[in-house]
Every structure is written in C-alpha cells, then in structure tokens.
Length: 244
Ligand code: NAD
Image 1 (tube, rainbow, N blue to C red):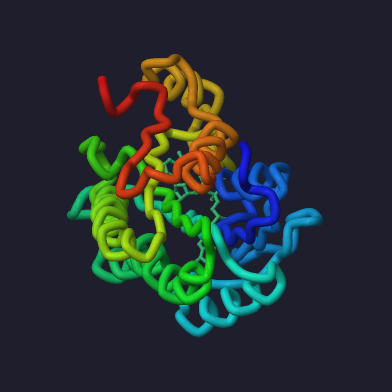
Image 2: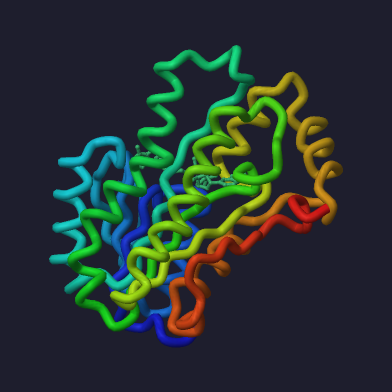
C-alpha cells in the first residue's frame, strides 16, 4: 500500500483480531502505529502499546494524546474496538444495551473527538470505523449488536459530511463473519466446535469465513492516499454475504 510510510496511525482494539491485523499491516507499510486496547501489552514492536478503555472518556483522551506524542502526530484513526451481544430485544437488559452502545458507538465518538485536533494538522487525515454487515443485514439474535453497528454506519456518514471540508476522510468497513479470536470464542462455547465451524463456513456464499487480513487490507486502503477521493462510504468485506 503506497503512501502510508511515515504516517502516524492509532488503532483501537488493536491487540486482537481485525485490529491487530490492521496495526501490523499499516506498520509493514511504514506507518508508525499505536495500539489502544484494554490489554495492549501482548503486541510486538514496533507497535506502540497504550492502555485505553474506549468506554472511558478520560482514558481515551490521555491515550490519544500520548499516541500523538509517541508517533509525532496522528494521520490515521482506526476505530475498531467493539464487543458483541447475542439475543432478541427480550433477552438483553437495559444495562447491556448501555454497555454495548457505550463501547461500539460512543467509543468511536470519544476517540474521534480526541483525535480531531491532530487529524486537522495532517495532509492525509483518515478515519476508518469497523462496522459490520449486521448494520444492514437483519441478522437473527443480534438486535443489540445490529443496532450498535447501524449507528456506526450512520455516524460514519454524518461525520464524513461534517469533516470533508477540513480534508478529513471518514469511511467504514463492513466485515462479514471474520475468523478472529472473537469468533473462535463463540465457536469454542458450542457443544461441537468443529461441527459449528463447518456449519458457519457452509452458510457463507464463499464457503469460508473472511480473514482478519482481508479486512485489514480494506482498512489500509481506505486509510491510504490511494483513497484520497473516498469518503462517506462503507466497504463490505463479506464474501458476498450481505449482497446475496
Ligand atoms: P476481538 O475480540 O478479536 O478483538 C477486539 C479487541 O478490542 C480486543 O483486543 C479487545 O481487548 C478490544 N476491546 C474491547 N473492548 C474495548 C474497550 N472498551 N476499549 C478498548 N479496547 C477494547 O474482535 P474482532 O473480531 O477482531 O472484532 C473487531 C471489530 O470488528 C469489532 O468492532 C467487531 O464488532 C467488528 N466485526 C467483527 C466481525 C467478526 O466476525 N469477527 C464481523 C464484523 C465486525
């Protein structure tokens, strides 16, 4: 990916799955990368580990300021931290709604708000939010999670409109089911994880799950100068799942 060299990138939820793959890919293309995560210490050099809880405004502000100092500025923000919830509207209590929306939606608001002063000083300012096919697909047993990702999609489009004249591009990726530790945890909880995985693969139009590296490649593209005229879009990386 051309044009990433020397840029400063912050990836939330960057210690696992899609976020870690993204942090590694941006770094491999020459970006300086800070990982903001609840548990960042497992990430390897040269990634910069910074502890942050996107559900806590003070924690986000401190970590973003520290990232800007460590990286010499912030050009790219990847709002990727997210948590799941399974159930219908009858299953998830109000507290769980508040907790998930606090991370998946307000987490993006807090981190973007903290990063905007640095992004305004960049000549390649780009924000990429990790959304999901759940935003539009009408998935069963995912009322809360889908609502949170629907909000991420709407937020992405509105923020893109608000900041386009400042030269800040804002897009999202919509992964289908991706083979990450998150999904592995769900499969491991099944009675027969191998059979569950086979059934999950069979439900994909492409016959397999999306990989974290494939989502990372889409994020890196949207973050890079190659996407200089791309803002206010959602790029599906779902093996055809949402479109079929
Ligand atoms: P993952 O669980 O492997 O990684 C998520 C990371 O986010 C973890 O390192 C975790 O510590 C961190 N995190 C969680 N809450 C946080 C908080 N409050 N503050 C800071 N960091 C926090 O998950 P993943 O599968 O890589 O998912 C990453 C993103 O991709 C999420 O936004 C998720 O909704 C989205 N997504 C995942 C899939 C999938 O199938 N895996 C599909 C569509 C979208």
